[in-house]
Image 1 (cartoon, rainbow, N blue to C red):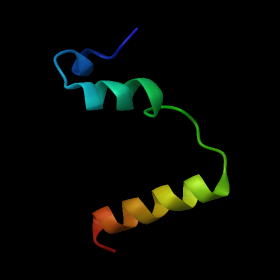
Image 2 (image 1 turned 30 degrees about the horizontal axis):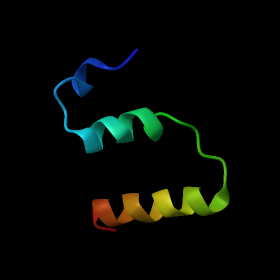
Image 3 (image 1 turned 135 degrees about the vertical axis):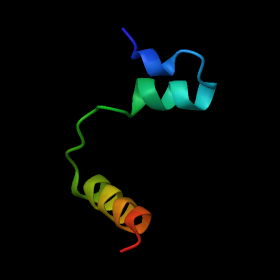
Image 4 (image 1 turned 30 degrees about the vertical axis):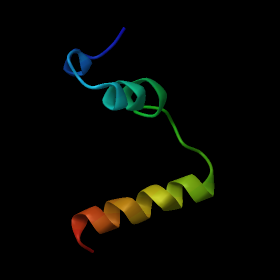
Length: 44
């Protein structure tokens, strides 16, 4: 079952939804990467 917002989206967003979004991440390197990306997005 897919989220309603994914219908009509481009293939890149569909792949992101199906393979990355909402999946738990447990390795330290991946968590650090997300922390850095969030900090850059927030302008910190």
